[in-house]
Each structure stands twice: as C-alpha cells, then as structure tokens.
Picture (tube, rainbow, N blue to C red):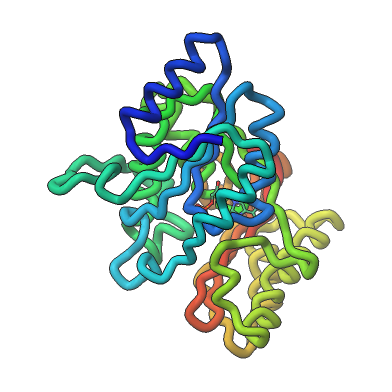
Length: 289
Ligand code: AMP
C-alpha cells in the first residue's frame, strides 16, 4: 500500500494505473476510520482494480465554532486498517497542499446545501463540495463511494457531479451501525456513557417512524411528529432538526387533500441532534440516492 502526500505524485501514480487500463475507485474520508468507512473501501475494492482512500480533515467544511482542531486523528491506526483491507493507495495531503495560502475558489450547490444540516452549518456544504470536486480532479476516479449516513452530502455530491459534468459514478452505500444501533461516526468517541445512552434515542425514534410507515403512515407531518415525540425530554439531548423531504430535491412534499404525503421511492427522513457538545445525524431513505 502506497501513502502519498503530494498532488503531483498521486497524479503520476494514478496515471500509471490508468495507462495499464485499470479502473480507479475512490473513497474520500476525514480519517479516524471505523467500519462505516471500511464498508465503503471494501465495496470499492470489489468493483475497481485500484482503490484509493483519501484522509484529509477538510477545514473548509467546519464552521468557526466547530471541532476542526479537536476532530479525532489517528493516522497510524487508519493506515493499518486500510492495509489489512488491501487498499492500494492512501492520499494523505497536508492542509496547504489542498488549500495553499491565498486559496479563493469555492463550489456552491444552491438550495441542497442550505436545507437540513445546512441551516445550522451554513458554510459546511460549500466546503464539502469544494474538497470533493478538488479530490475528483486530482484522483479522476471511475467510481466514488459515499455513505448514506451523510445522505444530504451524497445527494449534493451526485447533483454537483451531474451539473458540472464530472465523469464519475457516485455510489451511496448503507449506514453501518454499532451493536446498540447508533450509526458509526468518528465523533462518537466524544460521547460519555450517559451521552451515549441519550444518543440511542435518535436511531430508536427513527425506527419507530419507519415502523409506522411500514404500517401505512404516509403523512409527512405525522411521521415527523413520531420522531419528535421519541426525542422529547431526553436529558442531555437537544433536537437540531427533524425533516421528512423528497430525496432528490430535499424539498417538502406538496400539500394534497390527504396532507403532505410521502413517496415510498423518493423520501428522506433525517434528524440531527446535539448530545452534550456532540452533533449527531441519522436518517433512513425510501428509494435510491
Ligand atoms: P467522514 O470521514 O465522516 O467524512 O466520512 C467519510 C465517508 O464515510 C462519507 O461518505 C460518510 O458518509 C461515510 N460514513 C461515515 N460514517 C458511516 C457509517 N456509519 N456508515 C456508512 N458510511 C459512513
């Protein structure tokens, strides 16, 4: 497994594989890897000749009062996990390699970047879109793999790729959960035992909503209210948002005589909470990103 930190070097290495007719699969990450990331890398390996994983804690996607400095970093552990999996190349650039001094070009995905998580993190998705496009331009992958845990991110990246004519196939893979049901996240290490207890109400509330949908509930407002009820009065937990929106446009469903009825092939049910200082997100999807 090669570890490359410079852009020209990684481009030379990729070019070499391309000349040999090999396909390139790419998994962008911020490191502090867990089974969620590894599931992406595993699928990437199966579907491509060469698997590239990037590890870059992207400053552009953190707000001024967020956890950029504190974000967990453990390159040695990440490296051994990826080596064991048979990953071919880690791209591990420094901050200045990606954003040299004076850097000033950013990508904006209107609307999709302003709703859901974008409301409380107004610059986040511009930072995501910018780094993802830069990484696509550097690696030029055939396929790139994202997790549905960050459903809004996957929807937005897919739209950016379509609208900017980037020649890459985006794959969005299922959420990987811990034994207790909490979606795996690098930020889970911040949680105290009591906070983790509180955090479990998030997947549980979503399961309840999903069960109600399976039993026939179609009204978006009622689905939202099932989740809000499940998250009410939980010590240490505050709700950022609960949303039931169309999966392709992240918009509210149109009002009909029966209410705002969800579409079983195009619905995202998503929620974000804060447990102590830690922001957690979770969702389920009806349909395909
Ligand atoms: P991050 O390192 O948090 O930027 O995540 C890198 C990629 O891993 C993103 O595409 C995430 O959606 C994905 N990912 C993170 N956690 C999970 C999870 N629990 N299950 C599936 N994918 C995940």
